Image 1 (spheres, rainbow, N blue to C red):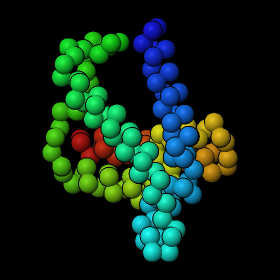
Image 2: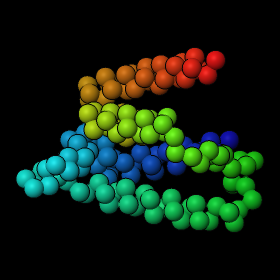
Image 3: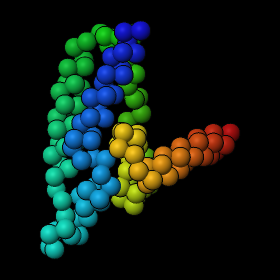
Amino acid sequence: MMARIVVFLAGVVFAAGLVIGGMTDPKKVQAFLDIGGIASGRWDPSLAFVMGGALMVAAIAFALLPKRKKPWFATGFDLPTVRRIDKALLAGAALFGVGWGLAGYCPGPAVASLTTGGMDIALFLPAMLVGMVLTKRFLQARAT
């Protein structure tokens, strides 16, 4: 039970950080991704600081990770084992980036945006979930 409370609180802190940092505002995200707008002044670099702060926290956490035998509320760490960069990773990253740029949302901020409402998020979230289900089915069919 305590693990679920900690996970919930971590999610609340994460969502609050996304909202406060502006990551749930599609126009701000698109202005950040529009590096072609540097000359005209349309580019908004402020989200780089949000991402930089997240990277610093993650870097510290991953640096401290080898010193722990196990997480506080789990029996072991669930870390990725695949370390190669392949076509599937690159294609997935490209699709993620294109979708993020077009919609102005990625999964974390999209879920956090449920707190602010809006028709765009009401359309985006179901489309994202359908995309996840279709991708899972495609990958399962390809593996057989």
